[in-house]
Every structure is written in C-alpha cells, then in structure tokens.
Image (cartoon, rainbow, N blue to C red; front, side, top):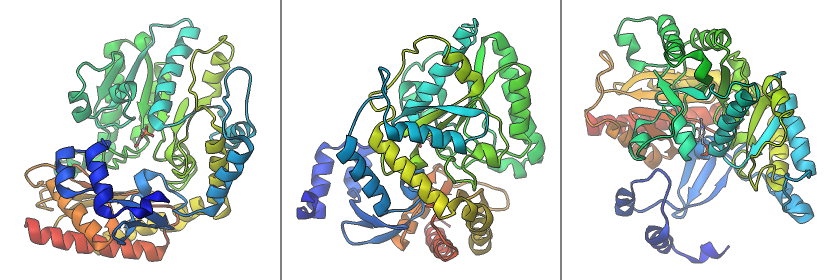
Amino acid sequence: MAYRNFSTTQLQEMDNAHHLHPFTDHAGLRGEGVRVVTGAEGAYIFDSEGKRILDGMAGLWCVNVGYGREELAKAAYEQMKELAYYNTFFKSTTAPAAMLAKRIADLAPTNFNQVFFGASGSESNDTSIRTVRYYWQLQGKPEKHIIISRDNAYHGSTIAATSMGGMGAMHGQLGPMLPGFRHVMCPYDFELKHKGESLEDFGIRAARAVEVAILQEGAENVAAFVGEPIQGAGGVKIPPPTYWPEIQRICKKYDILLMLDEVITAFGRTGAWFAAESMSIEADMITVAKAITSGYQPLSAVLVSDRVADVISKGGEYYHGYTYSGHPVTCAVALENIDIIEREGLIERVRDDTGPYLLERLQEVIGDHPLVGEVRGMGLLAAIEIVKDRETGERFPNEGSAAVCVRDHSIEAGMMMRAVGDTMILSPPLIWTRETIDEAAAICKVALDKAAADLL
Ligand code: PLP
C-alpha cells in the first residue's frame, strides 16, 4: 500500500493539514500529534511506531469478531468481483441483500420479519424516526409524531439523530434542534447509592418520567419512545431491572411504539443476538449497525416489527431510501460475519463465560482501587467510575480530566480504553478469552495506579 512509503511524521502532517476528525478538539489534536493506526490482528491494533495495543473498544464498539478475518476479506472480494454494486430500489434486489434480510429476521425476536438497510447507525435512526411517523400517518393519526427520548442518549450525529439524542454538548453546538423530540431523565445514576434511593425505586421513577411526559404532551401526540437498552456512548448506563418492564407497560397503556437503538448492543455484546432478548424487551423497531459486519463494512439496518411493517407495506410507495440500502458487498460481509459469530459460539461464550468473568475480574483487580467508585457491566460491556473519594462518590474537579488521565496511562500501558466524562469504558471484541481479560484487568490496574500518583 502506498502509505507504507510515508513516515509517521509525514502522515501526521497530512492529517493535521487536511483532515477534520469526528468528535475531536483539533487544536488539542494538533498539539499532541495524531496516532496513526496501521494494522490489526485478532484483539490487537498496531500503530505506525510499531506499538501493539490491546483494543478494549473493538474499534468503536463494532469489531466483534476481531481483526484480520480473511473470511470477511474474501466475502467482500468475491462479491465485488461478482456484483460490486446494484441498488435495491425500482423492483430490484441482490442475493446478499435478500439473504441477509432473511438471516436477520430469523435471528431477531419473533415479531420482527422485515428489515430496511442503511449505511450507518445515524442513518438507520433517521429511517426509524420516519417510519414510526409514517406508520401513525397511515393509521390516520398524523398528529402522533413526538418521540420521547432520554437525557444522555446517543443516537448518532445527523441532525435528526442529534435532536433525538440527549447529549447536551451536541445540542449546544447546533442552534435549534428539530422539533418533535422530548427528553426525560437518564435511567441510571451512579451517585444513587450515596443518595439513599433504592435502584428498584429509581428504575420505576425514571420510567414514570416517560409517563409524565406522555401525559403532558397528550398521548394522542406521541408516536414513540426510544432508548438504547444500555446507554453506550453516554457511559455504559445499565438501567435497573425495574426500568424496561415499566417502560413497556407505559408504552402499551398509551399506545406508543417502542423503538430500541441496538447499534451497540446487537450481535452479541450482551450475550445474546439482541439486548431485547437478554433484557426481555418487546420492541416495535430495532436499529442495528456496527457489529452487523464487525465494522468491516459500513452497514446498518432497521428491524421493523410485523405491527408496523404490515401497515407500511400496504401504504403505497414509501418515499424513503439510500443509494447504499442493501449494498451487496456490505451484506455479503455481514452474512459471513454472522456465520463466524455463530460458528465460533461467541455469543454463548460471552453469556456463559467471558461476560461474567470480565466483571468478576475487574472487581477483583481494581474494585477497591482508591480511584474507583464503581465497576459495572453486562456481557462484554463494562464501565469504571473514576472518583476522588470512593466513600462519598465525590468527583475530581474539571469533569472528565481524571478519566482522560487514566485513559492515557492505559494506552501507554498497552490497552485502548475510552473515557466518557468521568467514566472509563470497555467494549472489547467478543473473541477476548479469560487470558485477554486477565491482561486487560492488569493494564487497568497499572493505569489507575499511575493516574492515582498524578491525581491524588
Ligand atoms: N446509536 C448508538 C447507540 C450509537 O452508539 C451510535 C454510534 O456510536 C449511533 C447510533 C450512530 O451510529 P453511526 O456512528 O454509525 O452513525
């Protein structure tokens, strides 16, 4: 590849001069110099300086089958040779698109039998928003258009997905959000244990905030409630067990559709194909992306329940679609990726072995570290709360700076973690073994010890 002829400095110079990065403070980046990632194998990435780093984030929550899978490269190559592109508009389909739609419908909860493809999670959330609004229009209730979401939710970066999301910092940079979205409280509060309310009561209270919003807006105006089963980019916020059943009761009572954003949680992350299954949530729409191809190709999908699909498919032409809806190469890769997950029993392994072990091992190795206020997780998804005082839960001043310090030490010690506010995140490839988890926990300990020496 041509890039091999360039030095790290040359690549950094090109990048600095011309590349605007997502979610990046460019002044800070230009001061530090960007890391050039040049290769990856299994659970590890390599940078241009030859540093080998355990990838605790599976890229960006997506590389579930790990790096360097020849089967996936081969699937893309074979499909590109045979049919590199054709659209799925105008009464056409391709074999990979048809086969993947069926494969997903077979894996999904039984009330899901229709799939609409996109190229990113943001795009598919837009599809989901449009589809629920269209559904109510076809039902003769066009006034039912408001979507209730939660503070701290991340649903993507397009204007609609940002408006539906609940990230204050993103809203703050945009001027008026799109109308028709309402936000209620986030379903998790780490500081709860210092406030005296039980987790169960908090779960009910957080769900009832949705009911309050429905009553204020008028149920006749509310189309849907949307939520990530576990808020991912918001800090791996796992709602109490009382939350989703109560949400479900409320949605049924007021005839509100339930949209799940499983862009992070689908395809094995929580120890099931879908978190809807592991958390017993009955949804009407499910958005997936990322691990559908393990990030090897950009593909997303909206799973549309029979309730919604039956109405949409009788409504005449639905004026909605993307050039890359059902792109044959991405679908061929997804089919092979799903085969790998199945063949290697990755989901069962997460559910029965590595998921519980990750939490157990982190608790053992860093659970009582002076900087750690809480370790929580589900499947191969974990969070570590960084605090100044573990007895009171007091944070360090300058929100986020302590977690960034831990993250930088972690990368230095050989593992990629993410810092979200004062929370450290792990969302590794599902191929992690007990040995990889031992290695990760040991690196976390080194990073925390070094951060403690800097911070305390
Ligand atoms: N929804 C959730 C829950 C996500 O975590 C993300 C991305 O991290 C998105 C949607 C947006 O996906 P994309 O970045 O592919 O547009």
